Length: 222
Ligand SMILES: Nc1ncnc2c1ncn2[C@@H]1O[C@H](COP(=O)(O)OP(=O)(O)OP(=O)(O)O)[C@@H](O)[C@H]1O
Ligand SMILES: C[C@H](N)[C@H](N)CCCCCC(=O)O
Ligand SMILES: [Mg+2]
Image (cartoon, rainbow, N blue to C red):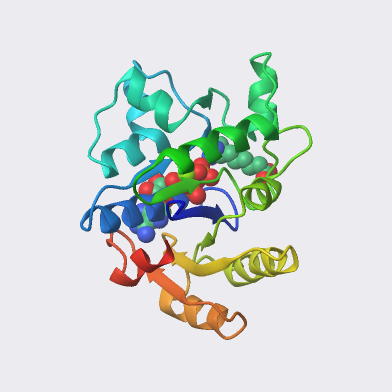
């Protein structure tokens, strides 16, 4: 039987994917081992730079209780780029080029060889490009694993969440839950945003308040 896996997609960038992936990882860890991956990471400082501590990779390693070493970093995030741009653009600035096949192949191998649940954080929003030809959506479609969609609670987040959820539905993908991660300074409580999203989508809509661990129900997405 293949291990359980979930793709954490975003309705946009800087929206809470890493925060929610780390919260989910910590929840799952209370029941046993979990593998959290951020295969493509842009805007990442070199491992030896103190700024690396702010990277998605460092946060996901911390959530897994792993130290930052060259080996743990490469095993979590094999494709890291300095520029804080879409990965295809950041790669081009370094004279590199990504292909969907190699990214999907790497993820499939990690899922197949894992003896525990696997959580994969995407990059940017659902249709942010990852290569010259492919977006996060194409990546999810190729992996064919369940999806958890993260959105914020800022004004406009309801439409962003529902648009992304609808695109996933139209592609026939398995959206398991939407998670509203509270945006700093949002004009309405995240529960109000979550209730509005829930009225228009058939999947559970969960809320993660500022600085909170997130509900126990988070663990049910994988
Ligand atoms: N519920 C929350 N409580 C506290 N801080 C949060 C919460 N959600 C998001 N943040 C903070 O907001 C910022 C953006 O969140 P995060 O890094 O998780 O976004 P992201 O979607 O993973 O971004 P990227 O597209 O760069 O991967 C971070 O500083 C993060 O710690
Ligand atoms: C730098 C940033 N935090 C992410 N790593 C990359 C976001 C790419 C978004 C591209 C886009 O959809 O316009
Ligand atoms: Mg992130």
